[in-house]
Image (cartoon, rainbow, N blue to C red):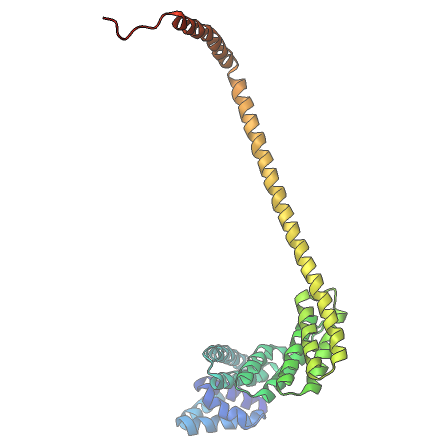
Length: 314
């Protein structure tokens, strides 16, 4: 009977807007209460009590199958996830939150409470909650995101560390230094353990976050140690970038020299081929030049020995 009620609720989800649905969902986390709240919200807000009644009756008469319910739920998730993102882009935080909460509730019905498929929705809820100043809610959502990351069969250290830093910063915004330090310290330990596989940028972020937190907590000696590690990491990164740039420059220079040598060789070969294709032409030209040169000299001699012609002759 309980499953049947869930199927009925899923059918009615597409008939109303997120704000109306939110009333029903927020009345109780219990799925039966959610279905009742949905009907009440519809009747009170939109005057569609009769419509809901007919919808439920139609669903009951048809005895909708689990496959059909799954199809309806998936469509609802897709539609309201898209709607929530649109509200979020427009900074309409309340509407975005209602849409994402609705998606989360339907996702729990479809996939179960512990499904990692809810992670994207939870991440959106972290953002919109923080944007509204609801840090307590944002922390709750972020804790679930982090737990999902840790519960993976093979947890990705980069993902876990990123989510820990995110949670640490949320605690820090509440001046909850104790919990903020716990998350930052854990991310630092994980970063040290994954030193060879963790990107430099991620390690720098971990060290910077942890050092800043320790300074806020007046743990200056410990902060100085972390800052020293940060300085070493930055220097190593700078050297690595310099070496990479030098390698790129050397490769470009080598390619340029190779291209120049190739062009010179091509020009030389072309000249040789031109000379080889006309063996007699060059010789005949040389003979003509050799023959003509004495003639030019004789004429020149003749002109120089003759007396200048007078321009004043009568």
